[in-house]
Length: 171
Image 1 (spheres, rainbow, N blue to C red):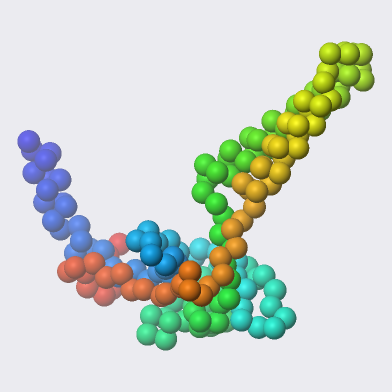
Image 2 (image 1 turned 180 degrees about the horizontal axis):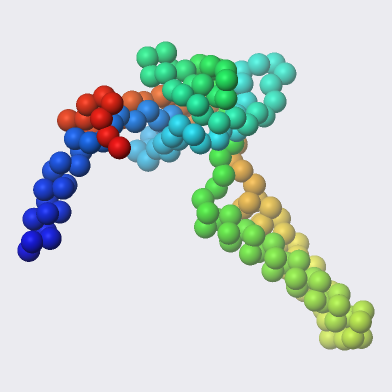
C-alpha cells in the first residue's frame, strides 16, 4: 500500500519534469501507426535531384516551424527528401539470417558428405531446392525497405510537448 501511494505521487509529478521532444515522424496513408525518428538517429535518404544518390547522415537538429532537418551540418526541407531506406524489424531480419545460414549449411554439409565421405545418399535435388528457396527468402528479409515519399508515405517534423512541461525543465 505504501509503495502504491509513492508510485501514484511520482506518476503525477513525472510529467512536469519531462521536456518537449522534437521528432521526425514517418507516416503512412490510412494507418494510425507511425514511426518516430528521434534526434541522434541515422537516416539513409535520397534527395529530389536528377542525379541523386543514397546518402547516410545523423539527425542533428529539427526545425518544427520550417519543417527542416539538420543532417550532419546541412539543413534540408522535409519536402526535399524523395525516399528513405528503413531496416525491417529485428524479428524479420533475424529470421532471414537464420534462413540464409540454414540454406548455406545444408548445401555445405551435403557437399562435404558427398565429396569427402563418399556418401551416395545425398540428394542434390533436395539441396538445390532448399538453397534455391531459402537464400532468396533470406536476401529479401534482410534487405532494407525503400520508402518513396508521396501519396503513400509522408515525413513531418513534430514537437511533442507533454502537458505541464516547461521548456528547459527535466533531467
